[in-house]
Image (tube, rainbow, N blue to C red; front, top):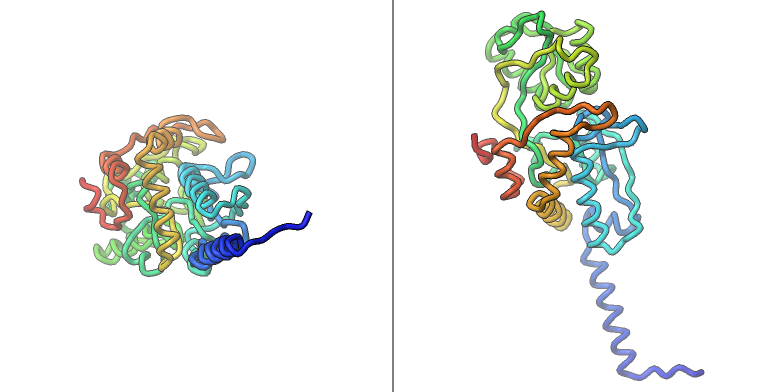
Length: 306
């Protein structure tokens, strides 16, 4: 049968085509890239328990990974890509910022501190955790305060805010600490475990997870003094990408203010987690409860209360 195309039909088709063209042209930055390749690259850590780490099947799992899954779902809906492919890319403390900045990774899902210095290079989603920089050592060494580290060999992870804080305090107090840089958290803790370092400076929750997962957890103790005020963790994304940032911020705000936010926190911090069933038993802090009620991407520790 011969089709009949009227002038009105042509006008409707033309308008629809223009609308689709306009929609395609509106996409910018990361969203445009994801739409074009049909995939999103998610950066993950190997040993940042419980935020982002590999389980016994070598699959990236964790608290931050669950949050990123919610972001990916929001991207999938926004771009109308039900078959959106998720590419998992391992990152380290040293490589995470460069890989975000150069476009290799679209979301870095781990335990990255949001601060003003890093905001010059990357952007951050709404805060998903608050931590403070402390150190872990063997109980037999009797190290509790920062000054107890005087003249000792102390390790921290390369590319972190913690190693900078350690160096700053070492210089300011003239402690003569021999500062070593490890490639990742697992290597740093192993150096304390094998007595190659007296202490390991890192975010308190990461230290707690490493101790809980150690061969002899009772042999270790956390410091009684911190190197910093509480610091916010955030999912990293590229700087100067307002459309993607807006989508990520909405996705995380919706997640944190919904029942899923508290439930996901409890899943990873107050219940047994894979692969060994360890339980960190870390309740949500008042500061983080406030940040979940009113989501914010602020890098200012004072924005989260005491």
